[in-house]
Image 1 (spheres, one colour):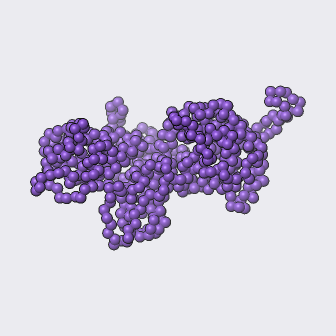
Image 2 (cartoon, rainbow, N blue to C red):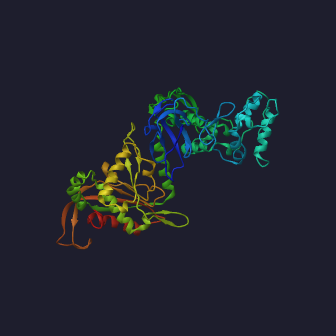
Image 3 (cartoon, helix red, strand yellow):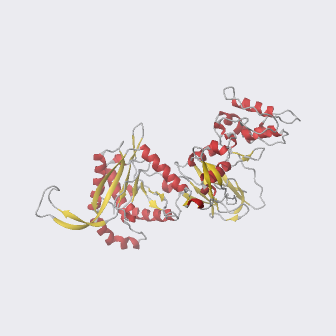
Length: 523
C-alpha cells in the first residue's frame, strides 16, 4: 500500500515551507529514515526523512515551491503500484492550456466557483481557440464551464460563466476583440483576489511585483513557476530555483531601470551574477540573508531601541571554568563560558520579569518560562558574510549549569551542520548574542521580535581596574590597580516596555550573578 509523504511537525510559528531540494528522484528506491528532501522555513533549513521504504512513485511539488503544512508532497510505494491522482490540497492541476493552476486561492470568486470546479472530473471538451485562451487566462478549466450538449464551447459561454461567478458586484470582464485576436488590453482580466495564495505569499516573501511578472496578462494566470522564472531572470534571485532551472540559459540584454531609463546591456554570469563589463559583481541575496534583512528592518521600525552597557569582572567565572571544564568533559559535556552567561541571564529575567515578555496592544504578555535564544554565526560565503541562526534553549530556568552547557554545545553543533529542527528555533523569550567570540568589544544588537530585549556580550580582555572598598567617587589610600578579565554587556531593549531603571536592574542582576559565581545559580 502506498505511503503518503507529509511534512513533519513544524510548530505553531511556521505557516508554510519552501521545497529547497529533492534528494531522491521519482523511480528511485528509498529506505525508511533516509533523507528524502530538504525544506526551508523562515527560521531553519532541515531534511525530511522517508516515512517508509519503497520506490518514490510521485513528487507532488517542485523545488522552489511554497507548500502548505498539511500537503501531501510525495508518495512512496511498490514500483508496480498504481497510485490515485493528486488531490486538490496536495498538488497543482493544469488548465486546458497546460498552465499550472494552484488549488489554494482567496476571494469570493475562487471560493464559490473556481476551487469547487477546478478539480471536477475532466471530460472531453470541444471549444474554440479563443474560448480556450479566455479560460486559460481566467485560471479556470473548460470542464467547469456549462456547455451545450454536443456543441463546442465559445468565448461567450466562458464569459457568461465568469459573469455568473463574479456576481453582480464584481467588475465585468474585458471584451475579446475576436477569435484568434491578440490580447492587447487583456481580455477577461480577473480581480487580483483570484491570484493563488501560494503565489501571493511567494511574491510577498521576495518582494516580487506580480504585475510586472504577469507582463500585461491577467494576474490569475500567474503560477509559481512563472513567478520564480521572473524573479530569476529580472531580479537576480537565482537561488529560488537553483536546481530546478539550471537548464535555463542566462539571459542578457537591455533592460529598463525604475524610471524607464535604458540600462547598458551587461554580460551576466547566471551562477555568480557577475556583470563583467562594469567591473562589478552582483551576488544575489541568499534566502537567509533576505530573511535576516526583513526581520532586522521590521524590528527597527517596530520597537524603539535603547542600549545600556555594563562592564563585568569575569574573574569568578573564568576561575570556575578552568577548574571544572575537565570534570564536565568526563561526563561528555563541553563547558563554555556561554553556559555561565545563559544561567546569569535567567537570574536577570527572574529579577525583572518584564524583560521576559512580549508587547501587545492589550497589555504586556509576561512569559513564565525562560527560553533563551542563542545566536549562532554560520560559516561565511564567498563574499565574506555568513548567516545567523538562533536556536533556543527551552526551559533554561529548570536546568543546572551542566544541563545548560549540554544544550549550548548540542545546539551550536547542529546549527553549524544544518541539522536543526523547526522546534529548535521556536518559542524563544529572550536572546543572547555573543559577538565577543570574534573579538568585538561592543555592539548594539537588534531585538528579535516579538521579544523585549537582547543581550550582547563582548570579548573578555584584561584591563586595569581600580579595586576599592570605598564609594566609587571617594578617594582612598587603600585603592589599588589590578588587571582583571573584563567583559562588556550591551542590553538593547524595547523602550515601550523597559525604561532605563528596569533595564539597568536586569543588567545589574546578570552582573552580580557572574561576579559572585556561583551565587544562586544551580551547579
